Image (cartoon, rainbow, N blue to C red):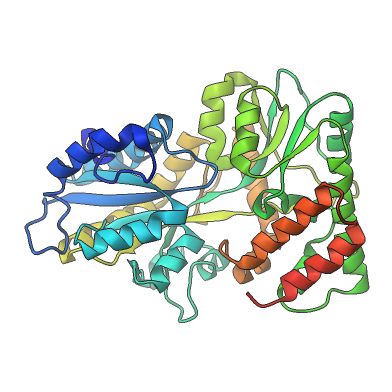
Length: 427
């Protein structure tokens, strides 16, 4: 893994000062190898990989170690077949990875593979930063058709090949909250009993509760440009009423972003939060056996929550050389075979396989059981995420409305009307 450690400096992360000086030196040493399209010889048998990080992930030494550990699983297995292969990687916030890779492409230093969320890959495909992934029938049959549709553009081109799935679950402190709430009613009761709860006004972090309150159908109609039925409009209002009621609870705090909630949870000032499964390794390191993971609460009537599933894909860098492109495609095919998908799932206990034929061992792991259940629950939200990608301006408008709601500035009824109008508007 020495090549992986060295490569962190070859792709210095924006605004991450601790890496800057070391990055400049190693970048000078390493740039001789990052010459995929510059006309100079590239290092043979080296696969360059750029990795996007989510907004709730700070690029620091801990994340570097986590990433190195995940890649070690793939690299070790792949090099048993191709011992001559070596890997180098760099980390970028997903918000800037497209622009950063575009600059590297112009200099002939672009990566061969890019590991990002599906929505990010679609944007990068539209801007020419990544190349369409070759559509091979036998290979594509391994994936859920809905997952593939989420990473296709309007011309049917694939922005990348699904590798892993991230889901939303509930994280709680076992030491202080031995039995996690299973319904939204129990969640409010837990806070009333003295357990601090953290929620977020970010739509992606909060939308799970729309399913629990039966509001997904109405939201789906609005996103499709329709006026929700009277019954569905009432359900949206009921969902927003629950959010406002939650904000009035003394021990429930709404945070502006997921990273803030995670920090408070790791500091021991919260007993329960919704969390992205990708955060589990860091939470385990901090809380140890006190970390509990469970499905998100359902509604009092049994309505399931609606967590959002993120699809992580391997996309092809558009400036890769012919040899680099061949290495990238071969490695991608290897990464989605059932054996590797199972090893990545069991080894990490934080992701699910994108290969639909890989069975998740839910009987042997409560964490994987919670992730698998969340994955199934996320299906009810598929039609919405196909129509609203994470850069959709309607998200920021919805967040502004929810912020006003939880601060008591507007009523649930007026918020429901305004939210429906926002969602029905074209982006």
